[in-house]
Image (cartoon, rainbow, N blue to C red; front, side):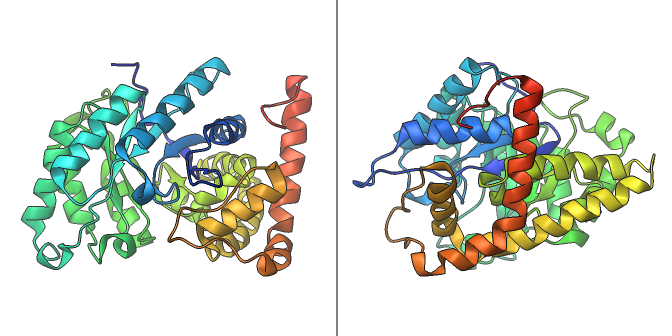
Length: 346
């Protein structure tokens, strides 16, 4: 099995998946995009909800991971973490996805229980715990719990359930809370960040590897870091990876309490990100691809039945994103100057 990197604290981007006019994978555009996001300072999530995982076959998911890992390593991003979606309706197939992801070069998988049988599982805590327990036991790489009730037919894991799963399963490396429940995040992080808990319940990746806990949005990244989150997984990273990485660093610095002036800097960044996150999220995957076509020269449309973004809404979206895109351009130029050469795709 390829080298496995621990899921580290930080900001992760659930990259979109690109298709050509025949709806076949556009690997060259995908690789170019992954490298640009990594250059911006973010780790990578492949075949998540934002990557149209539900539209991808087993071989396609593996092909994306393999292409990304090879490109990242060749570009010098050997430490960039790849987390891959393994969500499906059955425990058995989720484990199969995890095995295929590991073979392709993923460092961890993220799993959402997306099932038409949710009505028989909601409220059945034992069955829900058994699913994630079996996935963690069957996966050759660490597993991140993905809690997103909207995409899981209402299944919403509470903080107690997630903590019980984490304590009982060393191969569960973290939890992404796209439920955006700050109270739940705080209840989990209050426990998992304690040195005693980490010593008693070490992760399979090593005793010093933290339990990753964060939101699926960046519009409250700074407050969540103050609440002991270890990062976020945000689709906004597809259009402004440098800004998201900068906000994460600023939030961690401000949370340390070493310099009170850092709080204002983090809050200013958070204000820009919150406005942009709300605007882009409202347009869905189609809106993200529309903006990438404008900004980067690649994008395309989602696989059907997911609709493309209506270009009539383009000017308004571009206006809403103008502040964060200006900052992204500034940060990219600064990084380019510091490196003395152009970054990938810049």
